[in-house]
Length: 385
Image (cartoon, rainbow, N blue to C red):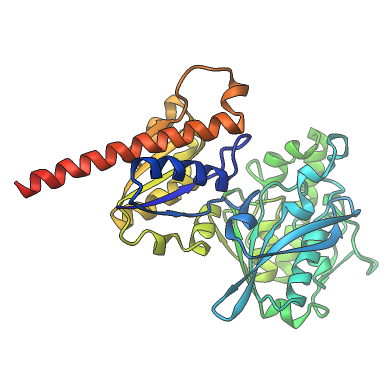
């Protein structure tokens, strides 16, 4: 029997790696002879670089407010080429700031560009960039400035960092962009489908989460609208209405328009890079899941991406969740079964403790594998009669 385990993190309890290992321990108790493969899972946010592995690289870059910090990305060797896996949040993430520092009108993505430049200097020409968890709303302008694009005001001076600077943009120049940037390919792991502007755009929807007041949101929307107009004048193919353009405060728009990036659902991009399809060849059972399974899971989150590939491979697929909400019924068409891992009522703090979560997950995986194995044995026995 071949079992593939591809669990997303149980946020607040277990990383994806810890969740996979706990489930594998339970599966081995039920089927010690089984071939068990573990696949890293992430959705483009925190944990994406770790999920894809590779060599960790540390470098000093600018944080969202321009202060030096140490950030890390990873380099993968593939087909004789080098791929850099970068989490935008490592240089421009909200967790890098104290709550009183949240200010998307000043926060910038310059450090993300510095990470890309460092990877280019190490021979990387392929990039996977996860753009979850940002503190910024600068339309990717900071990143572009780091990469050699000149975003200038009417006097020919560089615009200030942050969302406020976009209102002053007058023209764009790209003569200083290194050839290595133009020779590189960029894949963006992103689960956000918002356009750049409007009531569902980045300023209106995500600005308040990053510290913007209603007045700030109005100012940022006006600045982003002006920015989009200047970019369209410079590059008529720019489309701020495309899904994902509003991701990460407009970083999706910048990566697509200036760097020719393709935007992919985060989990889909990660699972492709992790070669899950190859792992699934000949698989009998797939275990997937996350901390909470609910209606949002059915809207394209990581377990659903795993389930689609598992179905295509002809494997049975079971989802395990730290909690299973009533609206998880929306997921029944994706999974053969859905089980919560909690075995007895207990306080939430206890249930989410890593030790308890690990034991519960292992026990749930063991039960699923025992049931699957027994059902398979009965089917084979009936067939032999």
